[in-house]
Length: 337
Image (cartoon, rainbow, N blue to C red; front, side, top):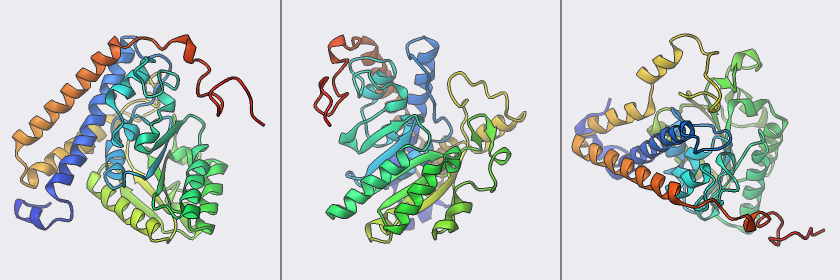
């Protein structure tokens, strides 16, 4: 473990460490609030939380350039917040309010904020991987320096689009980073029950000439460093990376999932011994950051989420007049061939 003297020589400075922790903590508090609002019947429809997986979203987002692009699954709250999207906008969207990122039309599974590089959350498993490849192809063709990052679960690795997207990206050496968030379960099914390899993403990397990369997805520093390397590779014109992040979701697959399929004691063990927030809070102390600084940061995050929640609650339901806006490319009823 690092000591106080080593912080000056570490490759991650104090400012960046506080940014990494702030991002993780913001996601944790916001996701917990989303769950509470669901219990109050204020969040309609289903939702998929990233409790326990915060370090992945934080590590990659903190390594990105502002013009980089993110493509997420239906479990996209964390990645949207990590890129700097409005907390009011995210909570408002979950509550289907007019202040939402998409004025309540997208909901939990379709969060989008292109101004922050969040190119959408997608409910169809694997559908967004070819989209990310398309974004990377555009960047390469135009000579832009942005990199596309596509986040997906371990279950996606058994979808055809995963293999097609990887193959295409490698053939054309596209600037795209594939990030598998391996949380041990493909919805309700353990990986080993339905997948031919132990590591669903990394063990398939060699088939596409890629390095097999497996990292601790609950260690924000390791995620951040790995992301930096992948982005440097992509911007240098050396093609894509495939990164498998080992993590664990502390909530059910969705709001309706009690997680009864988990072995007894497994969840408690992960919460006690491998919670990314607890681990990183302890690391900040080890690197000499004062407890008072950490306490103030956590206090400010809670205030931010509380204020955002109240603003969202007071926001009106979107008017029916926007029902057909942003449906077709001209914003109206007409279909263009």
